[in-house]
Length: 147
Figure 1: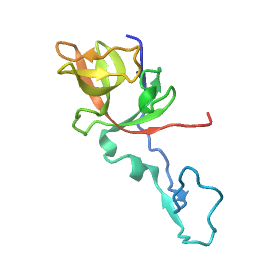
Figure 2 (figure 1 turned 180 degrees about the horizontal axis):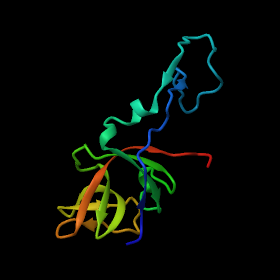
Figure 3 (figure 1 turned 60 degrees about the vertical axis):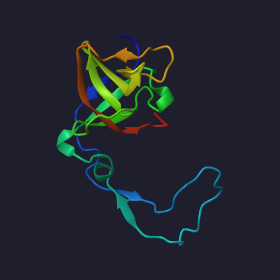
């Protein structure tokens, strides 16, 4: 079954220490930097706190394939997956379908639940009557611009 698949990696903490975090917000079209003294408050960002809501139910997956690019998931992206979230229509899931680990969006297609890709070359996969096991809901995607 071609398309987006998942490569499972261990559920280790993302970082052992909080990282420095700047308090200003960036926006597209913004030119230049604000004054360094303007509204400066030193603070930190702990990626575990920000991205992992239920550590005992969280694992990480590396995406392979191109079927989810239209929804912002690219080859090599790190997915943070939470097994404790009840899947709903529209969620992106990690599922085992017919023995293959897949990354797909849970959706209705022609009135029936399917696992869907964003890429038109990969047809929706019918869940009814298939051997499908849900592994979790994708909570976040980490995309590196410089690899």
